[in-house]
Image (cartoon, rainbow, N blue to C red; front, top):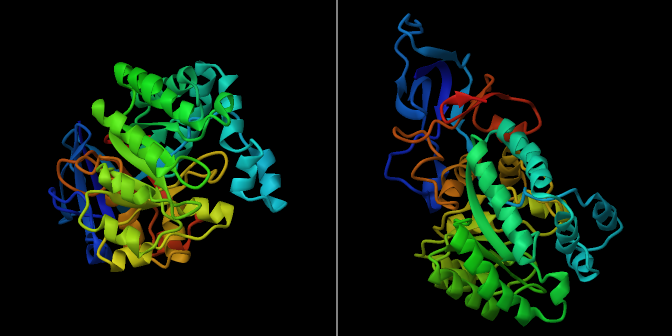
Amino acid sequence: MRTIIYNIGTLAGILPGDVRKLEGSQMNTVECIENAYLVIEDGVITEFGKQITNQVGNDGCEYIDAHGGFVMPAFCDSHTHIVYAGCRDGEFRDKIAGLSYEEIAARGGGILNSADLLHETSEDELYEQSMVRVREIMAMGTGAVEIKSGYGLTVEDELKMLRVIKRIKETAPVAVRANFLGAHAVGRAYRGRQSEYVDLVCKEMLPRVAEEGLADFVDVFCDEGFFTVEETDRILTEAARYGITPKIHANELEVSGGVQVGVKHGALSVDHLEKTTDAEIEALRGSCTMPTMLPGCSFFLGIPFGNAKGYIEAGLPVALASDYNPGSSPSGNMRFVMALGCIRMRLTPEQSFNACTINTAYAMGVSDQLGSITVGKKANLIITKPVPSLAFIPYSHQTPVIEQVILNGTAI
């Protein structure tokens, strides 16, 4: 099937086929074509350029009129926890009353509450609840999503989560990557016996996950009150035996050393980074690891925003993701993430756009297929209503400007 999108006011996010990420000053520019067209065949972008005529041919092709709006790559969200049961709105009241994330966790809440709920939820029900959120983020323009486990914290419940993620991958049009996060917290049964829980992750969870082929990545919450650098190193060393690519939660609560251990193991990304120093910038310089910041978490918890501007000025790449989860960032709206990148992190609209598309595609290992307008990439696209500029998209972040979302060449 050949589909032609015509009457495009601005085609934004054009990149050459060999570009996998943008670093430093490269993030300052978004290449665009005004008054453009784009051709899709079999779900892939095959051609685009300056529109010569507005005439629609009678040639059996499907034609989509963009009505002068923007056409841009769909957002890629490289850090979510959207497979979970129920919600944690009770903790919302605790936050309003002044309790911190760490205090809620220390009282046995937070991640452990989600684990309790998930344990009581069947796999089918967990899938149905999660698909509500998947459909929600697709409608808001997300075309690729990484989904983490980590609310199971037992062998069987972690596998249950990963099987649900696999089912989403097989049934939803959005591109999905699965991340095994058994080391999200210490399960209730192992309270006070953290080293034994790390044994469980390494000796029982990882072999089962690898045997069933359920994870593209392995992750560890390496931070104050969670897992140490030494424990993280051990888990990632074990994961390497199974060929599973590492990623890291790091420096959300304290400067933890998680960035450095992630770089040591060749992590695809290190995520959160609300608290970092020059040492983290130096550790990342010249590495293959994408620093990924989660402004939705900072917004919801009232904690510092990551130093995205400083990282870019140091010549590093930056990705922005939603951290969609029930406790610290209950939203998967990547357009709002792009807006927070501008409003609270002082990124330009161009820098924030690149951080939410090509760079976050890199952070989930799909920038060869998604994240830009490039011949040969999947046609995962957003068509907006006519808007005056790229800056208008984050500037008016609550105005409903998305007219259509196209995934794999098909309107959803």
